[in-house]
Image (cartoon, rainbow, N blue to C red; front, top):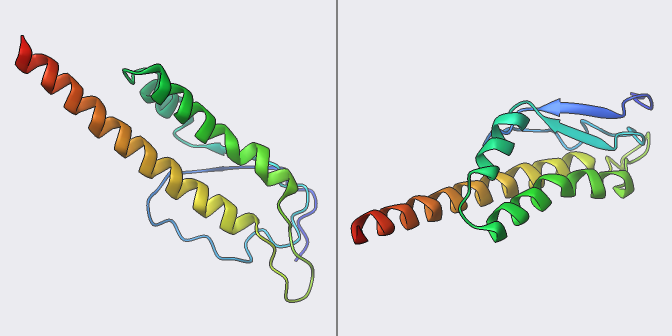
Length: 116
């Protein structure tokens, strides 16, 4: 397997998506991940009530493209590298954070509505 020309992928933001550890083995040039739902997710982030949440989510979405270029791609033997693991962990982290912020967002809206 040799995927030295692969520089960018687009994947869904899906809970439980299984990415095999060796999926991006030897993909040294893989440096950028886009999300299928990127535009919708950015709209969701923009709608969050607090600047702190929006900034945190923006950072969380961008972190993969900062860390992936320096993540080892493995070799042609046993070393599968870490790109698949880093991408999987990033997906889980983004999903967890957006679900948490959306729940807090709803709670604050309900609290404000109750006070009215």
